[in-house]
Length: 156
Image 1 (spheres, rainbow, N blue to C red):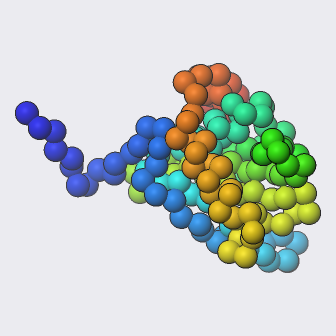
Image 2: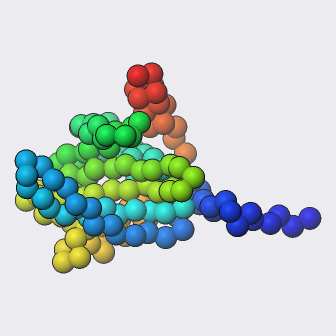
């Protein structure tokens, strides 16, 4: 018997994604507004894919950013060297949303001069998209990140 997909249920991809979008988000801090670019991987099996990818490659995050109306924080990795053959260091904020309406894992990436590496004008935009796309497709089977994450944030 052939399985059929319920069109009312979203399709999710294990160690993959349906597609990605670049979303420009307005932020306001101390009456100063700016746009930041978020790379969203849609249709993922876990909204934590980008966080797991960063943890697997760089260990525990350096900061947690609490967001209003969200159960889990955005995790921040500071001064990480994404590419072995470069001397550039980046700050990566990883997050995701898991709900019936939305299912995505996301990242925001800044270089050491605080430039948005995913902005439309960034010369690094495509290499960043490739880096995180390939990383999601090649995630390890390790459960260490999920265990640490849920021990830390589900007990609160």
